[in-house]
Amino acid sequence: MKKVNEVDFEYRFGDNGPKYLTKGPNVDIGVVVLKPGQDFPNHYHTTCEEAFYILEGSIDFYINNKRYPTKPGDMIQCSPGDSHYLINNSTGNFKAVFIKSPHIEANDSVAIEKPMIE
Image 1 (cartoon, helix red, strand yellow):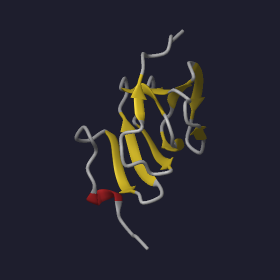
Image 2: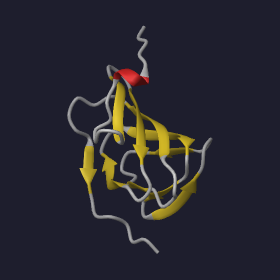
Image 3: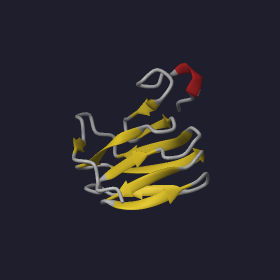
């Protein structure tokens, strides 16, 4: 059993970006915040799948170079090999829970070029 609170963890970039609430042994769970105009690099995972549950705001997900606008209550699930790029084109903050499974000890992310945005 494990119980944690989000306030006990820090975002990667101060007040935005991802922060992990738990890493392993079977799953990674965290929260990501992107401010207006911010993006998160296009990448894919070789082994794990990643799901996002949108809590606040709206954002454009590009999954395998196809745009998927999202809003609170939406869930996006990426299989291994699915590229995913996030960009906040809105005027408000975006916040989502992310879940990666299975937990991988080594870095499972492969960075790639941004998708063509129309």
